Image (cartoon, rainbow over all chains, first blue to last red):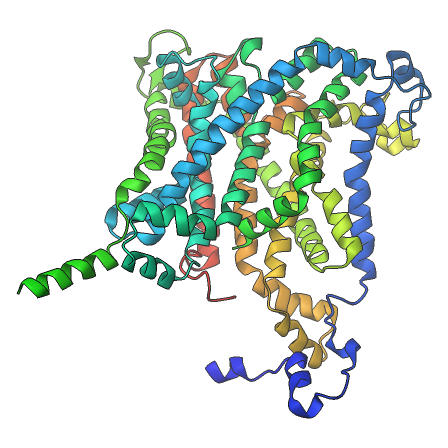
Length: 304
Length: 302
């Protein structure tokens, strides 16, 4: 078996052999099928793009129409007189307040969540013993269980703790729900950090606390970013916890505000869609700025 | 003797792992807001509670109510249908798109950038957008002038389930595409080069290299897809609120409406327990299909 794995030589190897050194290899043969033009794939790719873009286009175009324009013009045509009145209406309806609430809840749960998950992942990867094994298995179990099924006891706990209708009521369960996937991704990354690095630091008399922040953290930075982004997206877009654990406009977060706004302005579709655009815009800006990091982080995090 | 004690001690310091206490904060959060509520929901399923007043023990009556209620059976069926159809639709599309975008040409990279926009939208936003888009008077159908697209999509109980599956695909395929894209990029190119020399075509390469090499990616993505069916709650709640009638009232939504709208927390808890059992069984089944614990070997395949 072992020899079989070594046997097949790639074209690259052939090329590098001394006898071939002077000759330019035929580049076509070195190309894999993945790199040759793929018409069927291209067709599917463009079709999917249309599928993704048409709804986005419709939402943006409609949000720029006034009521009359919405009722009379062709839905897919851009407005003859684009207006920002809908956006003004949404912004006057406490959009900034809901935005701040979302920001507080997201930062407030992602940062502590990353902190505790990172420590746990470090202990699980570097440590030994039944306790850590058991803890790890418990977290893995959390991945398999639809944790939203536990919302009723959580509602009970939050009301008993007098936290109902506070932002803290959203932060606490959000931290807990992010732990399984965070620990999984972080520990998968940390396992690949060479043991020798830890050992040499240990020989220099480093404590675990120092090794964790000065070795493990820099080495797993891509994973930390991935987990941070993934959790932030989840909390920012979260709907169920706000729906059940908060009530008043003062604790309303963005996704919930879209829903209530839809109820209040059900006849004013352009305004409702303007609120959808406004709620998405901040994430879109972040996506445009940090796209590369974001996508490579997410890709690496979930394909390990 | 003193020397041997020191060596042994320093040896132990060298090999000793970090204290398990480092895992304690995460564990406490998880126990408090996930594991204890898990037992809590089981306990509450044997009680009567309206969500505000006293909780009183009520034996099996919630379970009898839930298990004899035809709406429960219907909710299970709707859940299964949505899970099945959205898997059938999402899995092949995201696999193909993942393979397609994994190659590095500029135009594919540019397409991929746009593909991932739905990832940024909240389910509430997606649902509201599609509600407007599917409107028979002011939506996409009349806009494109296609009579076939001009239907009361959300009001027709025969069609609505497929509309839901369609919207789910719009929102969640990009995420799974991303997972597959990463998986494909980790396949060693030497495999393709070898196949190329052996004269394997694109389709043959897909089936004999890409697909087998993606085994764990497929399991990860499928598990997230199936267990994640619960995340469709937000989307369906805003899009159809479970209607028309009970046509899209899937289990999590049925649980929410029973508990927080009909104020029957006992019955809702029983539904919650059913949900947990289903999730657990499905996840274990999928892991079993995978054959082994994927945490054991991270470097092996690379």
